[in-house]
Length: 260
Image 1 (cartoon, rainbow, N blue to C red):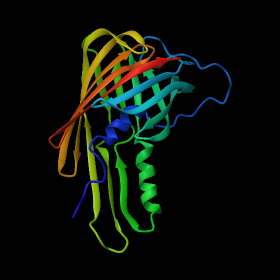
Image 2: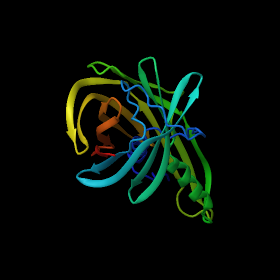
Image 3: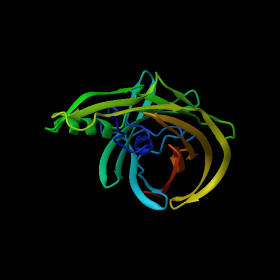
Image 4: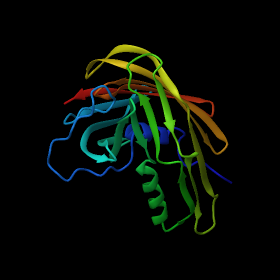
């Protein structure tokens, strides 16, 4: 007997909040952080961005992001985007990596640390045996064309099938074997419209990107449609997610609340 051990959209929510969830080596000097070109989706340096996320009308999380370091790698400037995240009553610190090349903003996406923490907690349990736990296809890259015009493309650079697998059981042999095998497929998207939107943090001209991520979790499947408004020098201004999974529909909205 097999059972799912988490909800269908938990990974996608974490991927959005972190957006880039990979460590980035920081500068060891105290010199000011160099800004990226303002015609990109890399946030401005020395500024903090506060977000609020609601799902079906209820507040489910907040995050504060800012560029807190940069380094050179083969002539390309890599920026570290630090995030303080609170979701479902839990707090996490995330470090994110961004870079700009060939007129595009690249966002590296890694497996959320919450996955590894969950596995470690299971392994510490005196009553549980974790038989296998692995991830595949990470890290990968979200790639957005910087041109603020309709039709600008959103693509992905993915090394292979993206997902994670875990199987564990009770040491005494009682109860079922718990198993989850989740796979994600990232679909390309594009800018559907250039529009100026107003959120609590202000009014911004944005590229409205629309794309989809499909997921398979054991025998269940679903699709998440993401609409995200991106502004030069800021990044995400607003994002709407609609998930249809196993016949059920959920939605969430994230907005930029404050810039300070």
